[in-house]
Image (cartoon, rainbow, N blue to C red; front, side, top):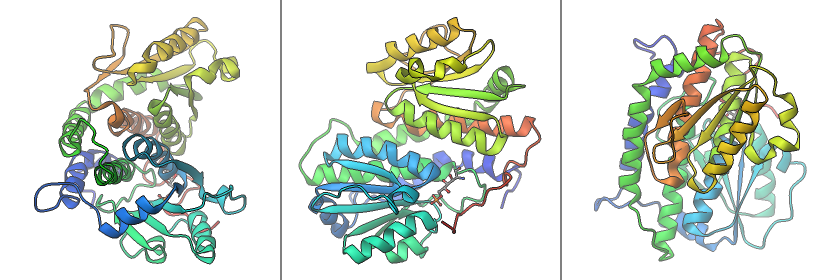
Length: 357
Ligand code: M6R
């Protein structure tokens, strides 16, 4: 139920800190350590390469998941769109494991891939919010998101829940392989939850940013590098699907390879800067578009920021920044849709779960 909220989307955005805490609990053992089933750890360790299959927002979570798994657990990962993989599969490694990421567990494009895999006898794991869903029943293993029902068509809390479960898998496998990282994921996810709360409390600020940058525009660009790039893809999808503003997310370094031609006087460009190693580069990209008249909005992480920034994100572990940098983009999409009088929870032409190929 929506309760006092005007829209499910806003309620679901607000639920994200609580979902983080719920996931931590759900994956903790009696000693308080993060854990997943031994069978799943074994399947992950037996694989020489993981293939993540997903669509839309879940695909964007997969792109971040690849980085988490490769960095923490040191297993190579490929991320594929279900609709592409099903008809043009890549050359597979010798011992692949397939990971399906799907909020609903019903996405037909992913299911088409699963059906093929089963013919080939490859193992599969589904990460889903819906126990008993098709992709969960048909895969060998399931990990649940514990995000509670997501009603709004625009996915929000499922995305951050997917990131959390992917980080837990990465961390648990790393420990099992005796790869020691100098942080405690339970603690880091707790810091994430608190940071999310601070952002949810700053809603008015994001409404102001939306009015300032997107009031009358027909298009909007999101730029970032590294993990921020993947969050930009998600921010652009969120904005276009509910506000119908044409939006594109891209890697800052790619601007000069084409997209910069689209920048005119007043074009909104939202830039994310959470990654220390590329902070100077993305700031350089912001200057390039500003020099061509773009209306630039820099969202930076505490520690990286300086006086020209429009919003400063509370600091979290450098690998977990997408968990929080996505919140401003979810809220900006929400307010853009609200101010344009769009149907926020049920955007035109879209369904919550896409059960046809
Ligand atoms: O249920 P799934 O996670 O498999 O759904 C995948 C996409 O259809 C979904 O993420 C879609 O892109 C959302 N509307 C995005 O907000």
